[in-house]
Length: 137
Image 1 (cartoon, rainbow, N blue to C red):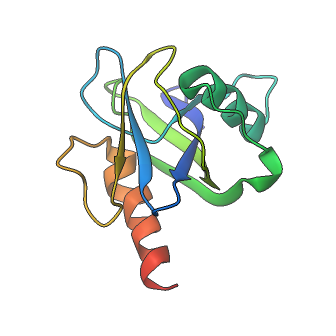
Image 2: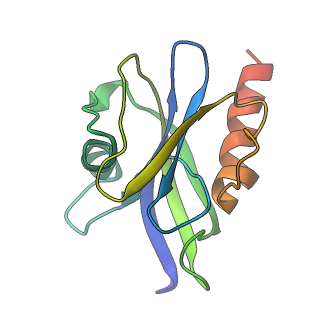
């Protein structure tokens, strides 16, 4: 992995209606899955639990997270960087609120984009992966 790659853990959070949560960080335009950078002393799942708590006041049971794989794309907010994301899927049935650096949250139907500007990773890989899983179910 090069120095221009940012390692993150992120989640496809799904509500009871099958909608997925996207977040927009303060001072940015693109919506993306919640999550964040993996600290040196963390596993991806530990980082995900920490980030979801910091960003959304959401406490998760890590054993309920389904690993979707590792995806890479251009970073949305760091020009010249790539993100390498360990992605997980979680079904949640609790309200979430933006916290820390999150300015806005939005639940969208995964079959569309909600008319939002999406981060490259979300647009190119994560939403298509989720859509494909719904169509094959």
